Image (cartoon, rainbow, N blue to C red; front, side):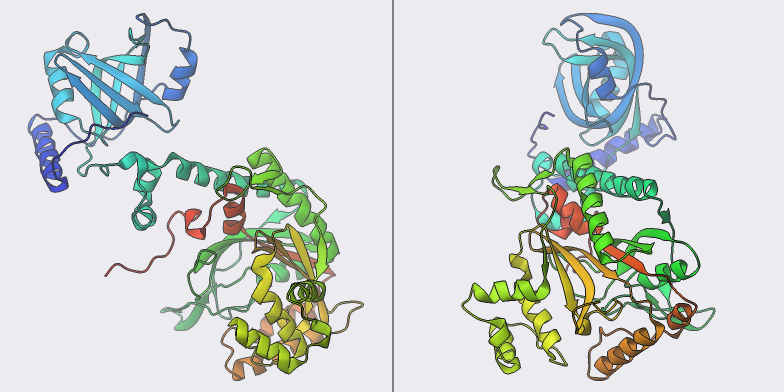
Length: 504
């Protein structure tokens, strides 16, 4: 794509000029915003079909093309216009008096600006300089752009502008569009894999009376007709488990969650999750499923299990299975051993002092398990991975089944890749009495000021009392997965319209 001609006219002056051209078009009886255009070919298709057309020759093939004007060059009686369409390819319009007539050529030369959408009908030719072109016999203004593209639109780099005006970012930076095409393919491949594995895709409520399934602060809203206080969901979990109770054995949902939390390179208050539940499975089965699923997605979308990561060309993450599996206690011992400390000999008071020195929040109830999880959270960004961290303290996992052989722990894993938690999974708690006790412990935590502690959900408990088979569950952050596969440093780079602080 060629760079546009740089002009010294100010932006406001350019906008006035474009407004004047718009008025001239309407005065001439030309609609600058017509309803449709009959396009016959995409630019990429034409480039492929006529790749062997010799320079200086033309065909008798009549075609019509349409797209955005990205370059315009006038040279007396000739006007050259480059148009780019949704195929991401460019086609040149070779406009002259012979093809368009005097009036048609004058109008295209005077009225068309960079950023306009136009259509043209004519024959295919290749210029003597070798440029595949359309020699138009007619042209149509499809949308007059009243604002010019950024002066250096083919390299828009201001991060604030890129996120706030994503449409400019997509125009200016082709690799950004590639990222979101890749995101779409990731979601499609997840669906394809799970559908083939016998999972059923479902939809569950976004508006919920009790926001459950995670430890997070919800957003609140109100339903006027029912005079009902509601919350945007923080998780997909509890309603999907109700479907397991109801007889579906394999279900999944890809949906938006909302958490009233801080914003960072890893967190956006509105984000996309995959959650799935499989009856008669435990967290070991789900670990195997996770590995197969993510390897399938990486291989299909990226073409390899060796994924580029970081600025250097030789920085590569190898996703080849099997992935290591370590318990949280083993990993904490390793973290502290690297610092010449011994977790098994560290007292609770020493652990609290260590967390304070590291600037980590102290748990409201500093039990041994809670302190273990806090020390792990202090250093989890050091995990390159991919690695499964398994067997979490029971205090931190109110919805997971107690470990069958390790007292004080639950059967849970998290997958870490490049220091980011990518997946979270349990052997799901299906004992309604145990679940009630866990919820009551969470209520005590709320009374101590933990606003993210899980609320008591009597309807969910009633569902469990109907009986839920052994079940394995999994949650994967779609945004973080795309960050990994697209080598994006921030979650804002993989969300089309991230939440931003208002401009002052």
